[in-house]
Length: 213
Image 1 (cartoon, rainbow, N blue to C red):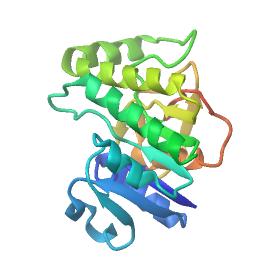
Image 2: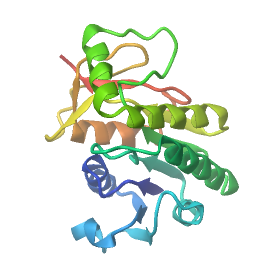
Image 3: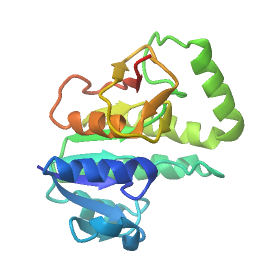
Image 4: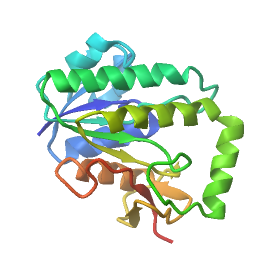
């Protein structure tokens, strides 16, 4: 399958790109600095541009069957939440124009994503800490989700807690209301994101995804 990948040079995105190629997907990705693709530069199609430019997003999704995004505010000095809201609006518009319906996007376990969620003490502490250090990032993720809910796309918003280094273990739990733990392996998370391309389990839902205790 030909997929569009946004955020392929980030911590999660790099692993997602590698796993996608291992599964035999054709990948087109949007990058501001193509040299950061490293060894994968000659194995993918890439658009040299920005996720904050509507035309670049449209060029990236053109001719693909599904879109996966790990784009989000930086861990250091996040700002301008509305910028990410606008980027999501532009992405939805680009997908609508090309009749592409499947979008898998990455959020976080510290922001809401459904009704009657179980906010354990650990999850509350996670949200409290991020509100102190990364509040604009949380606002951005909430704004992105509001855009998704209003769209006609078959979206899935995957919400992990802390993403840790490691190889795939398969030890992962997805639940709409409960967060299994406060950490997830980056390779397991990448595999879960790719699994959603063909799965109907989490259409228009926002699963919390974490390592099994």
